[in-house]
Amino acid sequence: MQDIKMDYFLVSIHFELQRENHKTIFSYLLGLCRMESTRLGQWLKLNLLVFVLVLLKAEAGYVPITYVKSAVTKGAVCLDGSPPAYHLDRGFGKGNNSWLVQFEGGGWCNNITTCLGRKMNRLGSSKRMGNQIAFSGILNNKRLFNPDFYNWNRIKVRYCDGSSFTGDVEAVNPVTKLHFRGARVFNAVVEDLLAKGMKNAQNAIISGCSAGGLTSILHCDRFRALLPLGAKVKCLSDAGYFINARDVSGTQHIEQFFGDVVTTHGSARNLPRSCTSRLIPRLCFFPQYVVSQITTPIFFVNAAYDSWQIKNILAPGNADPHGHWHSCKLDINNCSSNQLDLMQGFRTQFLRALTVLGNSPSKGMFIDSCYAHCQTEMQETWFRSDSPLLAKTTIAKAVADWFYERRLFHQIDCPYPCNPSCHNRVFQQDIPGV
Image 1 (cartoon, rainbow, N blue to C red):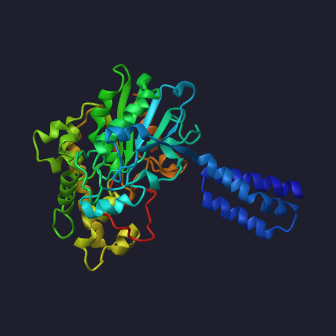
Image 2: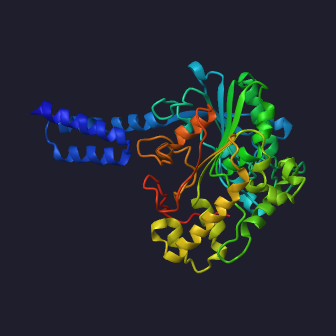
Image 3: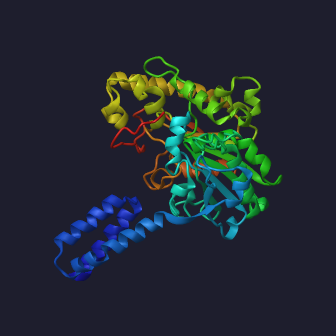
């Protein structure tokens, strides 16, 4: 009888592992522990914690931080003057000469006050960063969770400048002691990686999520120019396609905000020249005015109902003083029919902003109808048995097929709520944005 119970237990765990639902596994094990007073129950109680820790480690490995101390003498520093940093997990086997450089996201600061606020946390100071971070999703080093890039050199570049790595102001105010040097940080980090072997790259991807996804767009061609001539170099933007749209009050809030970012950080000189030669600098912070001129192949992963953009572009707090959107922004299931209509209108604007990409085979896209933000760094949305699908394809496979030129991928989802594979975000509180 004991053997039958053990067999049942192992089969059940195998089933849950296939689903890879940690909460379900934990709840199931805990339930068995409570029910069993037998030897099996005692075994479960003793090994539950070990099992969960091993399971979590399998989906995300921890990688130590590297400080680029040599960058300080070049003025390539965080907002507070501390050195830039990144996390590097070395490639192995056939991935030895392949490099994935992922830029961290975290919004922007648009004036002295907001930049001083960032200076006191990890988004403005490497002194405030943890010694190690988890690598999951596209950064995972297990083939099971990241089939095509698991053995590459995988880098997470920490974000501490507040300008998507575009700022460069020489003067440092003696009172605030703020350094606006994002563009220098970008160059210093890439130079350090080249010296550590990226100069021999055969394959390379610059990627990023949110503000990091915008970084991979704005620096796409620049990154390509720094890599070996014969290398296959491409760009990947996750949740970085921020559009220039009016909010629910009719105000062009996000354009003004991005304009303030560009002015505060002195970003104009580091935005793509192909855009600034035609348009005022603040518009060149928006991908829709830049991407048609990018010559390096680039892939866009984005939700048409991007949760950050709904919360901060369509319905920012200053456009909703009475908080009518508060519950809706926390959970799309709470949205009224009128709010959903406005969100459908936002999707229409988003898709219109994508039309500048045309049908070029060098530009791929995975545009789902989820209420989400950043889907390549999270295991559940990157590659898992229940990950979001378009054309029966996960994000991981779509990106890999496009990179290795196994097939083109240019898919746009039907309107919400048509896709049952979505992992729609549910927020506990409305975190302030721009």
